[in-house]
Image (cartoon, rainbow, N blue to C red; front, side, top):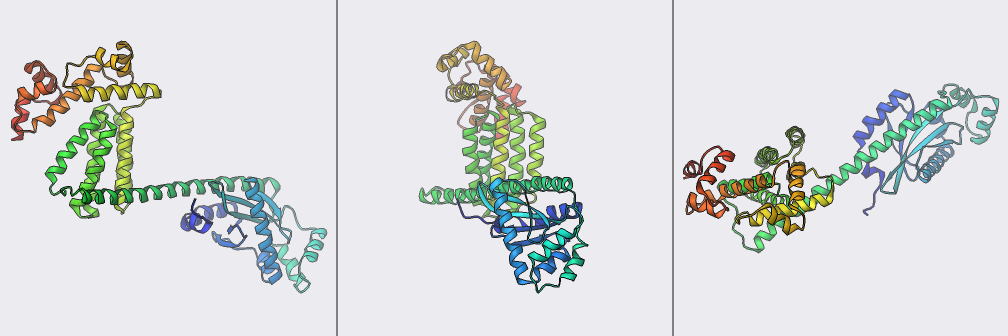
Length: 424
């Protein structure tokens, strides 16, 4: 695991925003310190008390404060919870550890309060623990200005701070994970481009080719074919990067279009429309606030994966495997006189069980799914001038051209002949 420290892990601006608000709400002093007890930042507008500043103005006092912070920080990490301690000057302070993946980075120090009004015993101990050269009359006066917090109030504040710090840790872990994902996406883009060069693959040169591949990609989404969809998406994005020469504005537009088209294809494939639209809106909001190309690609991969997952909301892994295997068998044999029984026999399950799985998991019958695959394949073949409507009908497994025309019209909205004529 790469070496980490608190300075590189926590976002200073976000840390200030969150903990400054905590300081204002509680009236407590807060500091971020590293493993050595060294103060990295005093958060919020609440500076150290006059008492603490006076103590630290002497070299020995500064050293004792540092030692107190270091000991408290180490103890809080040992127990992974708020650690209360009395500093050398008698103040009550607590430390909340910052631990990431079992690595201790530092702590948030809070407090600098008294639990009750300073009495004669407290003053005697204070005088004994500090330098003889220190002006004790001034120190005694500053003690009276210290805030007093009951044990209950201090514990509640410590518990609340623990929750806040854990939120900061989880947020930053998520940010780091995303940065790693962006880095991997960047490496993948570079690898794809290098592979094309090595294979002397023809460069993508026109949007006609891109749109043709895009239609194939959307077809895979409608059919819930995640493997082919993800593979085609990777090629689409590499094509887009090549065509635009890395122009971020154009890539952003195309990526937003692709996500929108994919959302509709997912709904057509059986995903819940409300959930898909919510995910699409969240995606659009995210895309509008980012600038790096690898982030565009990572985000669109992620949201389209979620769309595809929405088509298969399977609770049982065994069911997932069976349905996926049935779907793959259909994709490979759609042009044959395929039946529910033949597919069930291939999977070594009963036809009734397979029929039940299709209804339960895909919200359609076996024949509905088979027909959907055949129509999608018909649309692809229609784009080839050398294929007549009759040839297309036979190629996708229909014995009757008239029945093919009826089914095609039901799914596409026009007859095969009208559709084909519209293409040329």
